[in-house]
Image (tube, rainbow, N blue to C red; front, side):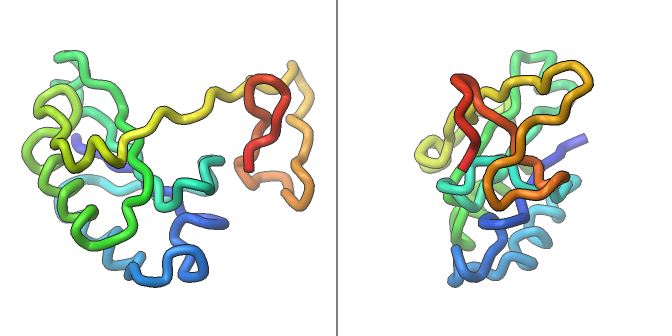
Length: 140
């Protein structure tokens, strides 16, 4: 099964941050080619709108791994993602050069200490999805 995770929280999906994009239409368009899972903050707010394209089981068997895409902020970028996923996606079809411009490596997260929740970032509330990054820094 083809799957795309779409960040929608404080920045991604925000008309304040990305006013020129119809965010609901973006999800609808992606849902034509894959199961779309909407998630809370992925802690990469400086790169909104963020999508994660998951490989299918066949793609994973062929070596495909999740591909994180940043700044998917217009209908052309959304169409490029949809076309790539329709063609097979990670592991089955090379990422088109235009989408290479959107690819990024997400920050690594530290697991919370046993039994203790991670410290809250200033202004964050429990359940916001924000966790500390390696080096003790909090995500933006």
